[in-house]
Image (cartoon, rainbow, N blue to C red; front, side):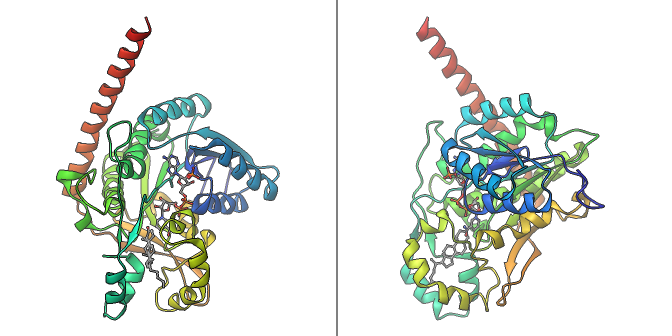
Amino acid sequence: IPINNNTFLGEVCLHACVYLPSVTLCSGIGLALCERLLTEESQLRLCLACRNLQRAEAARASLLTSHADASVDLLHLDVGSVQSVLAAAQEVKARYGRIDFLYLNAGIMPNPQVNVKAFFKGLFSWNVINMFATAEGLLTQQDLVNSDGLQEVFATNLFGHFLLIRELEPLLCKTDHVSRVVWTSSSNARRSAFSMEDMEHRNGTEPYSSSKYASDLLSLALNRHKNSQGLFSSVICPGLVMTNLTYGILPSGFWTLIMPIMWLIRIFTNTFTLTPYNGAEALHWLFLQKPESLDPRAKYHSLTSGLGTNYTQPRQMDIDEGTSEVLYSKLLELEKVVRRTLSESNADKESDGQ
Ligand SMILES: NC(=O)C1=CN([C@@H]2O[C@H](COP(=O)(O)OP(=O)(O)OC[C@H]3O[C@@H](n4cnc5c(N)ncnc54)[C@H](OP(=O)(O)O)[C@@H]3O)[C@@H](O)[C@H]2O)C=CC1
Ligand SMILES: CC(C)CCC[C@@H](C)[C@H]1CC[C@H]2C3=C(CC[C@]12C)[C@@]1(C)CCC(=O)C[C@@H]1CC3
């Protein structure tokens, strides 16, 4: 499907709601991206990979309302579960011959707590704009261990996506075809929240920031290892967007009440994109770019000016090759461990059943 002179697209799969053929889009930024992509090119083949098929059906129905002829497939995927990722990848390999775009959108921030004292302190400091843009020092979360024995935030925001890419390599790494993966990172990603000795963030209180910083590192490593095989990775930040994720931080009624203040803050920080449509700006922009023209060290930010104009701006990430390489090796090691554990537990189940 020729999109413009530079872009040629066949299939798009969204994870937790627009992948190509990867990742998550039942609501929020993912669903807004699907809408925008179909408006751009109605002939795309989208695959929405979602953990909740009822919500996925609703997302599909809403897309078909505005784009009646669109081709929208659904795939069950819980990116936080190793078994589900492996099964979903098998299904993708059976269904599709190639993947053009894999949007890695799924993300969680469980049990967020706002540090009210730090907020008021920051409000009267020179750092106030940075505080609103990055939430530095404002947010903590309580994480749990999942059924694979992994920290839930790490498993969902990073490792599940990594495993999916690994499983889909036959479709993503084709020498005669360029494929793209796009990570939805955050301005909240911070080097100081991440520790290589504790990459799952078992011991800290900022697993979200840690997982997003790890995705920035991993994208750099993927480019180094996979560009020669036709796979290109990019990172975006959608800005602060009103979605289920932010409604988990403060109640939606409160956000509605302070909306005029948020619009006012937007005059000082263009990172308050606020709507899923605006937040999807950089994801949509990347869709139209040639991968060779992109900077592997840049995070592409969706920004909205005080007057409501959307644009995308690259900003250098605080990452280095050495650290990204170490993380990549550690993820490959962990992959071996989880695969071994899973096959042992499947063998146990089989022998119990006999
Ligand atoms: N909102 C914001 O201000 C910002 C958001 N982001 C990032 O943007 C991305 C999208 O978030 P946003 O749209 O805001 O929030 P939403 O909560 O609306 O969307 C998150 C999506 O991820 C899906 N998801 C979560 N866990 C899993 C899982 N285990 N398996 C499959 N899908 C899963 C959710 O599915 P379900 O519908 O089933 O819950 C949902 O569709 C996230 O990665 C988030 O970290 C980054 C910066 C700012
Ligand atoms: C009166 C209000 C303007 C007070 C709002 C204060 C905070 C709740 C918010 C200020 C900066 C926000 C922010 C996020 C969440 C809400 C804030 C902390 C994110 C962490 C949400 C998820 C991300 O990935 C990045 C966001 C950065 C900014």
